[in-house]
Figure 1 (tube, rainbow, N blue to C red):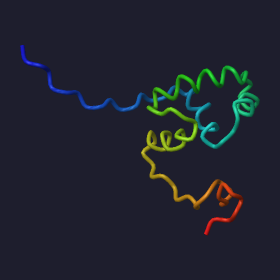
Figure 2: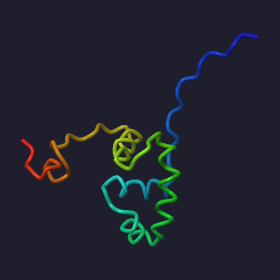
Figure 3: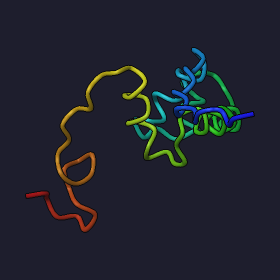
Figure 4: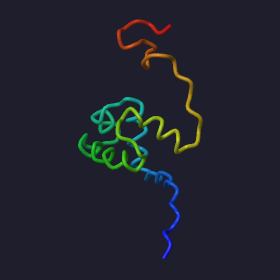
Length: 96
């Protein structure tokens, strides 16, 4: 019997509505506690959902969450200023 041809990498599984409802604010740098307060959930429940979301999206960190969610929607990633969210680099100096 001949070996079967290699399979293409599976596309990420779509998230459930609740997983997406938790993942989107997490991608905007809200803490689990802040997300839990908004959704009337325990911060531990939020963490549990995110723990399951990461492998579904093929990521390993919260920092990769925004890009993964944008990849699901098919929207192009928006232009970002150099540095952090406030336009400053890690050393506190403004980005040039």
